[in-house]
Image 1 (cartoon, helix red, strand yellow):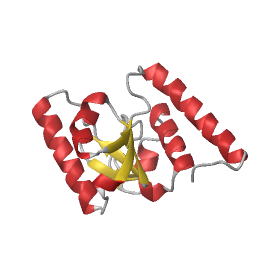
Image 2: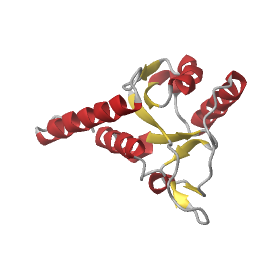
Image 3: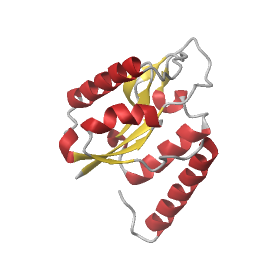
Length: 154
């Protein structure tokens, strides 16, 4: 079964006024950087997508101008966001019933996607910000050790 990684975009620290690739726009954020590092240890970049409140489903090489799209807790907005993301996944050819999704996004955003993704994993579920950074460090270290022993995932 194919595995796809969905990582949350974090607030960008980059300067406005020019286009940035998604991978560079959000890279200054420690959490985004660690989620991306872990996903890249596990799979190829064509199986990694970033999820943004304002731009929805993004490839790592998509180009954007820095903009502030604050997260929402409004159920109607979350449901609409989820519909757009699921539609974009299908348009990109993802076979939702036959793909495992490893999801690194906030719980309220997960809730609107999970009903459409029968095979999913939430490695950071229930963890605080600090705990999630620690867990990501553990996941990265474990995967690097497995790769050095010839047991890597890729």
